[in-house]
Image (cartoon, rainbow, N blue to C red; front, side, top):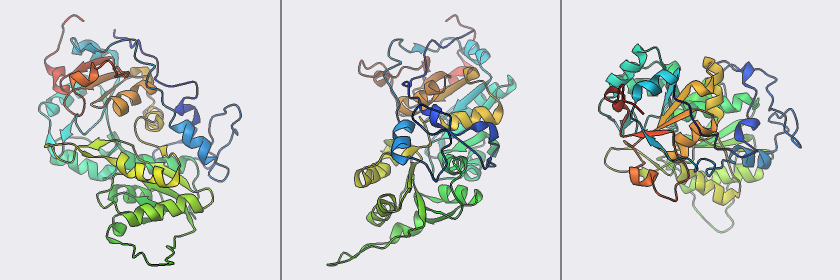
Length: 369
């Protein structure tokens, strides 16, 4: 049996201690009395109306990456042992399952093997451009049999988070992002503005010009946005800075993303960074490495976190996500992270195991670790 020797990579003020009560969460149906877990000097019940944004922003994003530096990652030599040691595999998508619109070699056979062994498969992505239904169509186009209930995108996480804190339905949400966020917010019953529609808007700067904004916006959600412009930056900034209690949410802070298989492209973190600079506020991050989605998944499927293996290609999101959740972790070198990056002395995030790609599960069988 393979046992992870790594403690969760969090400080005493671990992010999951400030997440909603998941006992009442089912799909997107949330209890109207959702509360945050008690913490010294923090109010026991934290809803949208008495939410301390500055304090919450800091707590949600206080991730310590140096707690895992004591044990170097081991090459995966016995895939069967790892497979037998867990009940659930959580896979990142970009760089693990596909690159851009190209499926990575051996993925269908690997997923079929794991299903044949009775393993639960879950697919988690920080990419917020698509809804869960849209990602389901992408899996189908690539020839993969994955149902919507197995897919968790950060677009869905944004809507789920707002529901979990009882964000009022009479407040609006300004979106800097793409269609995926809009679809998930609409499915959750929220009113929104912004999104791709604001991509063509420009500001004509004249002497004395004052830009108006909607005073009923109670949250600004920022995700990856190929239609990003100065109008959106200014509008989001005004909402966060001038609307009392306005929340600032980020689907992720990824530095790069895989839009094509030819090169890396600037990720959602570049859009979030613009708002951080203009508002001087840190966002609540609902995607990886925040443990929000991990806690949601564990509650939804009734999974013991020690029985989960997180498989990803990024150290600072995927692997940290798994470690913060108390899971086993497997890094694949088919995406962002190279072996030299993993073994760099300055890298403090070490997974339990690493391998070249997930199809190594097919060949690394029965060896002695």
